[in-house]
Image (cartoon, rainbow, N blue to C red):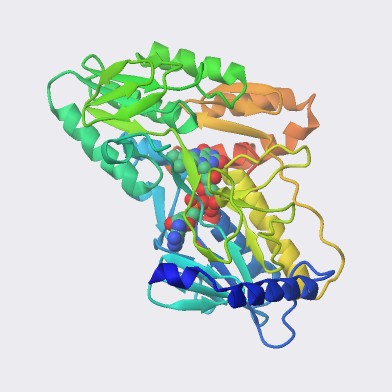
Length: 449
Ligand SMILES: Cc1cc2nc3c(=O)[nH]c(=O)nc-3n(C[C@H](O)[C@H](O)[C@H](O)COP(=O)(O)OP(=O)(O)OC[C@H]3O[C@@H](n4cnc5c(N)ncnc54)[C@H](O)[C@@H]3O)c2cc1C
């Protein structure tokens, strides 16, 4: 049934191409088509970092009598991904990592808790689980999900870490392992930022539960070093901390098969495990569109320098689902700070268009000043511009402050941090981590719309 609906006849195909050309012509000179009568209907698919940040920014820029915003997500909770590894290790509460999506009363925003099933681009219509939504402007911010790279048994036998539900499942399994008085091995497949932070958090948890001698943690990584897309100094520093805490590394080891209590690597290594965690890959969230739009090999939507999708004048993608290159042709990383910056950029461009400003838009230019990852509740490592930083938040701020006299770019960041109340709660730590590395707003402000 569904297949027949998707496969277009020759007549439908021609009509699609004609409508597509018309929509391009209409947008000529403007960022997106101007709605000449009534309110502009903006549909935002996904209420994660990008969707919520975009929604908040647009609401501030466009008077409520000019827009109707529909925000859609299959969950009614916004999730704080930077502390998921702490929840998984039992070092932070489940509730610390989520907060309800509640639009302010009497606002132009309507929130729909529903799954997105299909987007009909020509008809400007989104099919949800049991309803549909029409739009003038569409923002796709559906994020990314776990990729198992078609490794046999991985989906069935390894636990991912992408949501609070995943974190809670890992936490429950960890509690069983801690309570069981026998030796156990935990395998983390993937030595990127999530795998490294998770390993450090699990080490801290086993130490706190006095079972570090019987619970061992192994990171299995296909590349020759951990954090292969980070500067080598950061990779070295994190590796030293993990090894000092008893984590074993299996490098240059590509996983071929995951069974219930074993993994097998392509070079014939077999490693037993009580719990296998999968932090190895990311793929764009699945999305069906008519007509089909072009995606990368990791299923992200190809967007141009203006966040536009497939040449449609009124369709944009931001955040993890958007595959965009910077001015040098390098892809922007899938980070909260990029999602926030794209959201702010796009809200400004769309607000200008709604106001009828016909000046040509500027390209998106993101700035990733630095990145930070946590090695347990109190220790962080990362890089800001050319500086590698490591330690507690306080010591990192102090080091950056000392350097800010000779580096003016650091001064504003340091001033912002020093003005923060240094509350020691986990949420505050996550907020500081975010603020420290140039994210446009702090998570506490961005979490609700
Ligand atoms: C464990 C972990 C730790 C991280 N730590 C950091 C960090 O420290 N710093 C940093 O900068 N970045 C970090 N990131 C990356 C950061 O979370 C992402 O870059 C950011 O969330 C991207 O925002 P987004 O809006 O594109 O996607 P998301 O925030 O993932 O939001 C996507 C939304 O779409 C919804 N959705 C998906 N499919 C559907 C559907 N079919 N129907 C309806 N709704 C749907 C989801 O429910 C979700 O709410 C981390 C990611 C993970 C997984």
